[in-house]
Image (cartoon, rainbow, N blue to C red; front, side):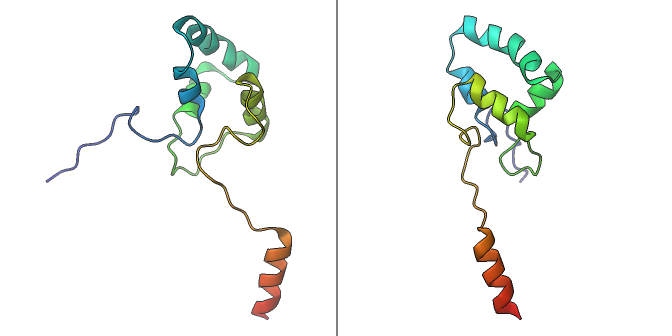
Length: 101
């Protein structure tokens, strides 16, 4: 049997943008939707695409845009992303590379 596709609202997002907007009052939400694209220097369509990026997508928001969104929503740096990002330190990578030789 065919699995039903999830609606856009049901798919977990990579960034907390929509969640943060949903926690606003209706008046603030409407204002934010109008203000944000100009604030981040992108068109409305691009902003809408950013807030709908699925968690498993390889698509990313540019770093400078992410910083502006974090500042707009008064978030600590690095907290716009849903989920954990792990990247080994340069020391770990160098050690791993040495052990392969």
